[in-house]
Length: 453
Image (tube, rainbow, N blue to C red; front, side, top):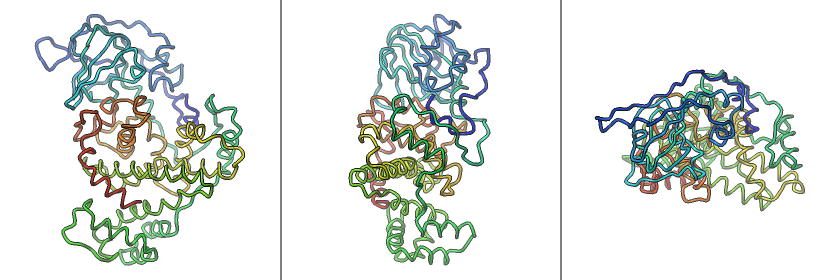
């Protein structure tokens, strides 16, 4: 179990044990070309726990829960259709033996072998199948009720009104490191140096809570000429398809709207938090800011294209997805003789960012939906339970898309296999299986990045 899962009131290890009866749906029918093939054999024999614990996200769930999971082992012959693109399902499928070919909403197909490390990831994990799966050889499939995906995401569990921290259990690979032990102790004892909102963003947040009008808002923003210039630039950009240019702050705020202006000012102001005095760490901070800009811009355009959620909300959500890294770098700056080399520091960030990021956002007064973003941003199998994309879904898609062409591309799931993907209105993929809608919107992504940078 990842140690940061213990930091919240509803740890996944405390989820109720699963049902004792299988809940697997396999549409079949030999005469209809749109149906799936029947398995040649179906077994309810338990798969060893050691095998189950190799599979994501089961490997990060409590052993007792995983051991009690009801699952079915299905055998298919070569040429069989396991599931089809767009088919509704309540099951999650894993490849145990053989080779499958998957055809997502793309001009290309890809194959997956049970010998590949990617076979430890689900073939599908949403309520709707993101591809059609064909058996290239005789294959064995493990089918598990999709209920565990919702359990994994914490759906239906009571959400805490405030973040409550308990003892941290560090991952084995860094448990003995003095720096991370000290950081965890400071986190636990509420002694971390957390960033605070820049003055204009804080005043604007307070003004909006008091329901002040546009004139008062313009006065607050007007004290920072750089923010005014950015808002005018954005209001005149292709992102908002202007008919005529605006030349002053009042006109820009009128075009953008008060609520959108508040979120955009927050996004612009956040850049001030990404600072360090140490040159080495400042390089890391600048790289973090640049990557956050990219995630933010992808999220903004993706929300625009999908029609929901609100694009400005998505922009802000993408920008704060890695905000938990800031206190880690600041802590390293405070203790220059203790922090490990940068590679080790990088390897720890995925464990530290989720809980620390949520703490930072709670401290800054962000809404719960936004405070949850760092916690779930790289939880590829997160399932909100909603049919509509929410902010977490958007950021997950943006994050996953951002890893295409990087060293991490070999260890992440295919887009079409995650729950968030199946909620997209335009799920077309490029030949390399990235999001076609983002591939075609590069100019708007660049415009969003230029606005924030």
